Length: 88
Image (cartoon, rainbow, N blue to C red; front, top):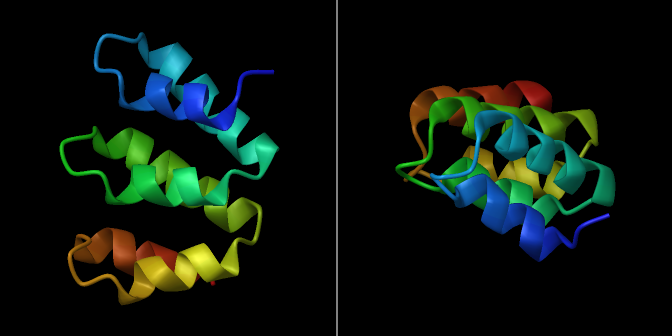
């Protein structure tokens, strides 16, 4: 299994294929890398599908601390904040 750092780099690599980026998010979730998943959610310029997938992974793994940080993050787009709130 790849390290959380390597998986995170794959997600933010715009040259990586879509399936590799999605698999990397799944890998972060399985590894319990909640900080990296939260960073994906707040990364501007990253395709919304990856941000939503990371957010849903946080909800699936009940990462309440990270979800609460997202709910309170006013720099995050409202739909993502609202989804984070739904997942708490």
